[in-house]
Length: 352
Image 1 (cartoon, rainbow, N blue to C red):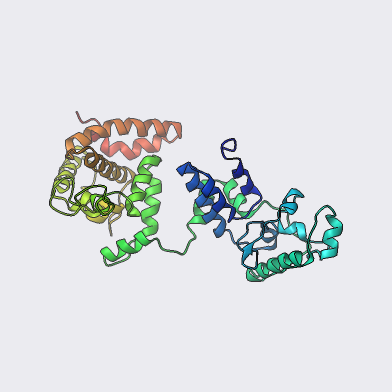
Image 2 (image 1 turned 135 degrees about the vertical axis):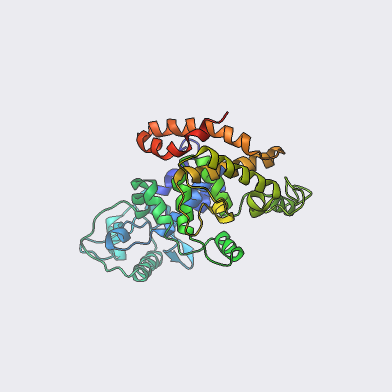
């Protein structure tokens, strides 16, 4: 990627605001989204101790500004001055202007500019309530420390946001009560490793799946009516639950599960279970959660293809999905737990 977008390498020396420059330059939507989420992660990484504060970037740091403008001094960057700790003296104090010019004689620096930057850093230090010390560890910047720990650490940091997504507020309003969103989002992640299915379910949760109602508002289609029943407005809830044709699909799928899975507790499909994977006082296993997501994905494909969702056809496709999931379990060395999970559903996967 650095050969295509070499400026990405500057994320290792600049603060979060540099992401705005990259998002203008980068045309690939995937990498633009990566940079957007990098900026979001960076803003979650508030320094909590002297080590993390000393590792903060100076340039393009939204927390360090002069006259409401971010700091960017090319001479400093060319001479390797990119972190706050590089402006400290041997006794743990900020370098005064004379000490700075003596230590970096090749840098031409205006006294007022330098003092303005030091003042901005001190204000940031006061804001995060950190005391200076001569003893601190030269750590990597906090955001990169988290990234290097892997996906789980990044996800944990992003999940710390106190902001409630607009879609969550809308769903809560529809059902007149707050749902267990932590459980809902966790289930999406744990049910399958298939990134396509995860992204599909997340689009439902965030209300960004393109239904006819939305497409009609965008003037992409002429009618907001349901693709199947042609009677009601096609919303996410209608498409996957309230539509009469879809109700027939869920009823026949329920019958097939009852007949094929002798040891399986009778599934009771409800609107919240179908849409979000949760229902009050109901515990589901990973396989039934996966079947529900696959069923919704099948319904959505039928909508796009202009066909009617038929439970018998969907059940036949489960055989191929079973083979894929079994291979994935072998690769991940979890074949034993996979066999136990799918044991009650084996007859269903052998449907003709």
